[in-house]
Length: 182
Image (tube, rainbow, N blue to C red; front, side, top):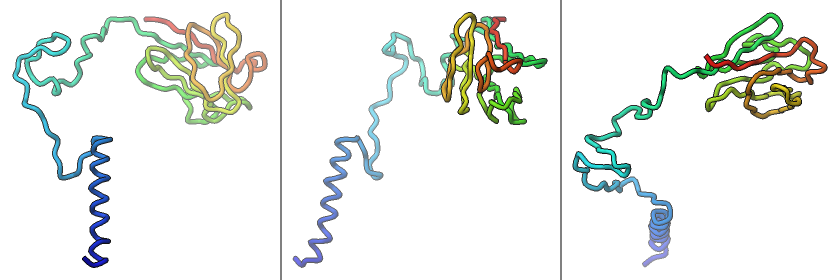
């Protein structure tokens, strides 16, 4: 054998070892290999939860809809700022608070950012998320004032939101909120 043939054969041998190792460790297959399936199940049969399976269930779009109760009460968030009032429903809509004209609730104070915070419905509750440097000050019920900066917080009951400055110094530039079930 000449020196040239040795050099050509080494990378191929190394590649096989690496691919075998990768297949063993990570379950990787080469593009030429096909996945091996077992025989198709014989219908009907009982699954692991003792439910009778009559056909292939992968074609069902959503099996969880049976737990949805359309008659259940929904939680609404009522917001008011100066002479502006609105109701937020749990439909996935996000309300943006800030100085920017594109914000849903425009707060014109020197301490509020252009896009200061957002309020959204997630996981069964309303949450406020701060996006500013000055932070957001929140009072819920009779609790003390909470200051969040760059974080999310769950809103509950009723209270006030002040953008960029504590409630004491905010004057009339506060947002009042309350939750009601309807």
